[in-house]
Image 1 (cartoon, rainbow, N blue to C red):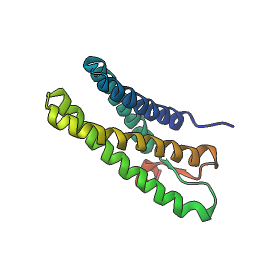
Image 2 (image 1 turned 90 degrees about the vertical axis):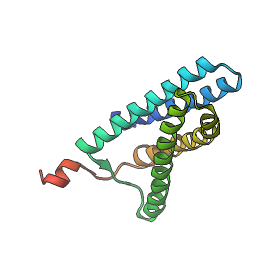
Image 3 (image 1 turned 90 degrees about the horizontal axis):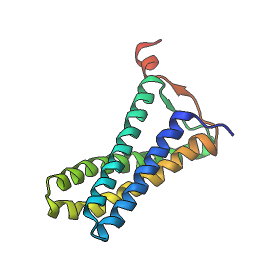
Amino acid sequence: MSVPFWPTLSTFLIVLSAVLVAIGWSLIRKKKIEAHKKTMLAAAVSAVLFLIIYVSRTIIVGNTSFGGPDGLKIYYTIFLIFHICLAMTGAVLGVVTIVAGLKNNLVRHRKLGPVTSVIWLFTALTGVLVYLLLYVFYKGGETTSMLKAILGF
């Protein structure tokens, strides 16, 4: 079985960010504040690297459509929309939570942190499932370049 490099790398980065979030959460429960801060910032860097790869690939290469059975396409699409909503919510909350922590707004940080972490963990899980559905369980469908779609070449 051969899997595409860039989607595999970006999925790895999201999984890494989720693992780091889980470790960071564990560290703060143990009152290891500096280790928590460093781990959560590393999780954010991993997520930003994912975003850079994902957006660059989408602009240059395009997105891969679902290549599985037609009968599953509607369920995949609904699941993908759910994943995208989770990812957008988790990203916004992640930025707000990190900024609150860095500005020492601990009331806000402590309130948002657990919610943000759970959303991010589910984002990573659903992201892995999207990856598996697109590249492992089924052969990916058509990939169309955004530039080709917009500019016609």
